[in-house]
Structure formats: C-alpha cells, structure tokens
Image (tube, rainbow over all chains, first blue to last red):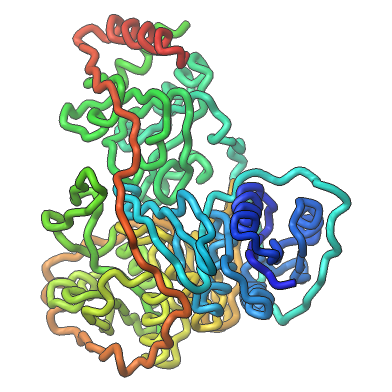
Length: 309
Length: 258
C-alpha cells in the first residue's frame, strides 16, 4: 500500500494534530494510502508513535550521542522510497530540519502557515496564512507538498501498535558533547487561562519581582515578547510569544511594556481579552487591546496587584 | 576556511497595509536587510575573525535585491564579498525554490565549510529556508544556534533547547541557523559603510546555476483577510493609578476573564 502522508518526528512525539490532519486527508479523498511516520529520535518516541494510530512506523536507530538532526538524510531516504502526497512536521527546530531534508529530496513545495488542508483530486488545497498572518491565501497544490504545522499533543495509545521498522544509516557528522539546563521552570503556556507578557518596557531583571507578584495575584503565567539582545536571558525560551515562538489563546492576556509589533502580537490575536499597559500613548498595542492603560508600569502593576487581592 | 552567510533584502509586513479582501499593499514598506540577518552575520563574523576565514554573503530574489544599497547594507556588516542572484522570475518564489537557488550559489562559490543564516526572515518567518538549503546540499542543519567556535572539521555549535543549551561537535560542512538573540550585532560606522562600497558584489546568472525545477506547482486561487476579534479599544484614565487598577479589575471581572 502506498503512503499518502508521511509525518516526520524528532525527539518528542507531540504529533496528535498531525495525525488528525493526515487521517482527514485520507478519508476525504477516499484514498487508501497510508499514514506513515518516520522517527529520528530515541526508541521510546518511536514506540509512542507506533501505538498512536498511524499505519506504519520507521525508526532511524541512532547512537546515543547523535541528535535527531543527524538522521535528516536517512529520513529523506525513507520518505523518498515511498513518495507521498503530503509530508507533515511540527513546529520544532528538530522537526523543521527533518522536514527540510525530506522536502528537498522530494522537490516538494513548502508551506508553513496552513490554517486548513483538504484533499482535492490528486492534490491538496491549503488555506495558508502569510506575512505574519496579515493575510491568508488559498493555495491549490499539485505535486508533493511539505507542511509545517502545530504538532498538537502526544497522542494517547490507540491499541497495541504497529511494528517498528528499523533502518540504520550513517548519521550526519553531529555529536552531542554537552547538555546544560538553566533550571527554569517548564511551562505550558497553551494551557494557561491567563498570561502576562512582558516586553522592553521592563528595565531590569530585578523588576521581574513586580510581575511575579501580579502573576501570583492574577493566577497567571508569565511570558515575553521576543528579546533581540544578547544576555536578556530572563526566562526560558518556551515563554517567548510571537511569530517564531508560541501562539496562545488564553482568556486574558496582559501586555506589559510591549509596543504591539506584529511579530509578537501574532502570538496572542486569539486571546479572549487583551489588556495593554504602556507609557507610550502612540504604541500600536493600544489599537489591538480591549483595555489600555497609558502610564508607568512601575506604578500601574503594583496598583493592579493590590486591586486583585 | 570559507563561511557563507545567506541574507535577505525584503520588506517588513509591519509597514504593509492589507485590504478587506486580503490583498497586501507593500508600496509604503521600505526594503531593508531582514531583521535577524545582522545577528547571523555577527555570529559568523566572530568565527571568521577567530579563524581568519573568508566571510561571503549570498542572497537571491526579485529585482532590487542586487541594488547597490542592498549589497552595501550587507557588506557593511563585515562580509568580505557578496554573491547575488537577482532575477524577476524569483518574485513570489517559494521557500523550496529559494533554498535550491541558494544551494546553487553555495556550490558555485565552492569549498564552503559553513553556511550561517538568520533565525527566519522578517516577512515570511517560515524558518524553513536554512533546513531546505541543508537538504539540497546534503549537509546537516542545526537551528537556534547561539554560539559558534572552533575550526572547520571540529566546529563547536551551541544551540538552545527547551530549558537550556546543548553543545554539538560538527565534523563537516553544515548549515546553521542563528537564534534571533544569539548576538548583538555591531552597528556599522562610517568606515564600514565606505569600505562596503569597495568590496566585491558578484552577480550570478540564475540560468547558469542549473537549479532543478520543483516537482510541485502552487497556484494562489484567492486571498482573504484573517478573521480577527474586534477589540474594545477602551482607554482607562490612569491619572490615579489605584482608581485605574480598580476600574480595570472590575471590567475584567465583568467580562468573566478573572
């Protein structure tokens, strides 16, 4: 049986959304092609994927000190051996490397802003958000296409699973020498009902205490707009919100000291309610907020913290 | 050692305007060096200075990307020379096509040890061109790179991972995408701008690169404006911070979000 959709997987199996998209493509087209996954990460990832409801799993066994990226060409070989209509990958650095290798091998088109994907004859139609999501294009694709999408959650086990086919290929010259964790608390911003975002308006790392007090009073998570300066390592990268970071849809988003630039705001346009605090009355954030407070955050934030208690 | 930095001359969507039907008007957006490319050039330049490597820029795109102002913007950041593929047929080119053209340029330059790119472009922000480029060249790719040391054949690459960093040893040619916060770029001074005018900018003919066509055709059949929640835009008077805070908290309680 031929493969209709390949899913590339790196070192974590959060591919629930990709499986759903792949299945929908198969059902709508009445295609009897398979949903297959190729895994470049450690074996336990392959085992999770094998039990997730895909029709086929290939695992590129790697030496322990090789990162998932070392299997990129092996992944391309696997996908090219059974060329699909669509290749899917999640929005993570490792998966983007694997997807790029597969797409280059297939000479596929690549789209990274898919809002929806549907089968259309032998091809697909994608509604694709472009240019920082200021516009959407409906794109008809004929020929192979690689889509970068939100991977979704780790799929629950859907049965005993399919057998894992193992391929070995010479890994590309990458070796892990050292891993250092910063000790930041991990956070799932996507699950937080209330999020506070901080921007350049916050002058010093010590000032984070002000925000932490507000976060505690509001029972909110703390996030930030993308810092561009070196050494602004105030929090883990998983707290960055924007076009190249997280996109969230909380009940409440408080933008503090954030100017409201496109690259950041694209990450929070889906929030139910947006509040902006900024000392610049002309900041573009105010046009994108439900409630705006023009003023000094060093006065307003403690005041709001008190009002919440 | 030869280090290539791929950069993009393009417009910022922040300055574009969008019609109700989703058509984008770029006419008031001034083109410039894509926001994160100076970071990539800075990261590569530090390695070039440490190793004596040649630092070569590469860019591909529609008419305009090869203009003197564009070449100078990149060269003034510390490149020794730049290679430009400027072709009207690249207008609206997809990620895959651009990556294939860049790969052709890297092969043309020859004996390249390392390609460094920015995190993503300011307009498309796909984060895919570096990984597609690596796929085209058959080289490993690593993203979120924030430190780069060593020599060709034994490069030490530090990259961000969730919650920390990881150091990799890279033993052959590779494509590295610099994290957006990897480095604070030096600001070009008068000397750099003047020197840039004298550095070589080589224009390559697209046809001469023999880039194989993609196997897929994309046809845009329509555009639309993404649905956006309409926002109240209510400004709360902050003359008295305590009163403003109370008003805000009451409004949020009323809206059911607190």
